Image (cartoon, rainbow, N blue to C red):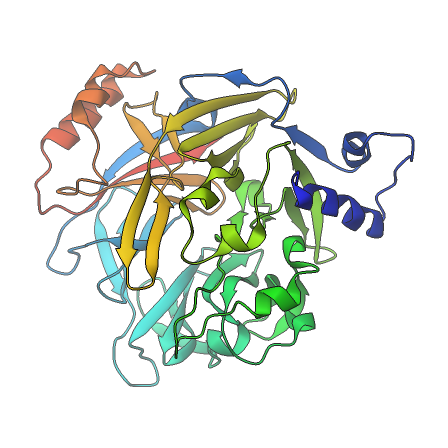
Length: 440
């Protein structure tokens, strides 16, 4: 079956009013409404894709270590024009640093009081009001703090579990609006099939104002609900990757899992408008086999696009098939496509439920850092204008090859030397070093 969701999209577009001529080809019908990123046409194979194509500059920022700011693994990170905000796995404070890496203060109050909490799910930075929204899970709700750490108010006392039907939840603050995305696997609780939604505009109390469904779920609702998570007795439920969401250039765009369309959110009408269609003749495989929690090795042999990254001139797509990882670079100006192929490996991990098969580094978007050297791994994206690579001293997975940096050809040798000096002089117990790329 050839990219079923691509042809499903045609029907959806006809419903929302996209004009077409019956004598036109399928691709031309869609071209009338949006641009087509053709991955089955004449594509240039390249050995390098450079960071300077997307970013105007990079900054190397070692985060200061103090008695109050000793960091471990970073779970969430936001960068604004003046500050760096970090949430780590081991506690539920938000750590504030200056853009030069100097520790400024902590935000949050751990405890049982009305201004306090035990754990947080996520946090948002509202740089206009100079406020932080902490999405707490114990107790559930949304607490608001000022930049200096002072508690300001409780925006909501509702739990995300009351709103979402899954453990795979994403949150977005955009244009002073809150959005939630819920992805498979759905939980084993009452859920009418007509209530299945994938993306929602909500108010500050998590009340849904408008919902949207992943087109790949349409027609599969009953089948999907039959494969929900039941934690009381483990079953091999269905799951999917996270929704790919971006806010580059102050535009909210997203791509649902298993679909071949990038949508742009129209704030004036609160609608998702198709922006790009991704076309390929590659097969996607059986839905049940490719969505099973415990997958067979063969389920990874099918093509999929996992993530996209928009920039001024290019849109990058991260895809995989078998043991190959593909980074596509689509040129907005002329429609040309370049691709860099990386050979990876499928790993096996036995468990009491079966053999887990995963593709190593399948979600890693990596460009050649020709601005200061080495490879640039996009670990976080923030505020629609920053990409951040996190380097953790002492880590075998999240460190960088210094010899590779030294051998790199870069646009600014002085900056490369400063980067090398920073890497060579870092202490093992130091906080992470951030490489912040400012997009063009």
